[in-house]
Length: 217
View 1 (cartoon, rainbow, N blue to C red):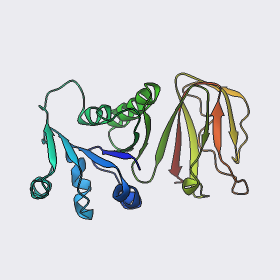
View 2 (tube, helix red, strand yellow; view 1 turned 180 degrees about the horizontal axis):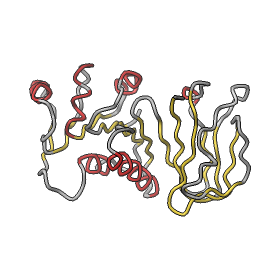
View 3 (tube, rainbow, N blue to C red; view 1 turned 45 degrees about the vertical axis):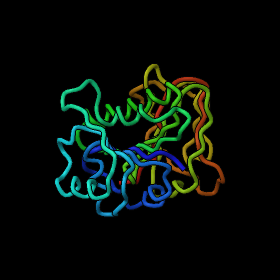
View 4 (cartoon, rainbow, N blue to C red; view 1 turned 180 degrees about the vertical axis):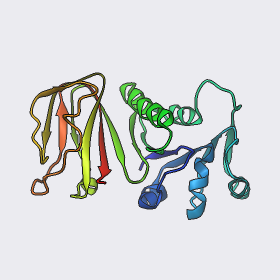
């Protein structure tokens, strides 16, 4: 089980996430993130935010279900999503459900937030229901979850900060062995899984990067 934090905004597909949501230890919504739960009648534990973008229908539903609400002013130093995420104890596993397309400032800010929290010791990953993002920091060996290994997806490594060193892949179609990857390099974009292998993933000796598994287009 994990703690699910759902951001506001469009472009999230919760249908593939329903088993996770129904088994979650806790569901925390950042303001209009609660709108995405209403069609499935999955009641969140808490809604954080200034309630400036949530629909009237969802507000009525939350009141009917007596959902806890933490109100913040519209003008504040952090987004509702960051407030929600940093409220979770570090020993808990977090699934951050957020839009990974649309406004680039929101998308980039949320991805960098995920990376920062990983560096601070949080166990966190992000998804919009279709694309999955896993932050990796330091010496690390990462296995792609078996349920995401398909021939209709691609897997990219996006280095951040000063990049990643000693990066190798296993179970991948295109080989990668002990390479140093700098931010902006396209070397590790759009790899694919070798479906004849049993394990798929990457390892690095140092650095920071995002592993992104996303449908082919």
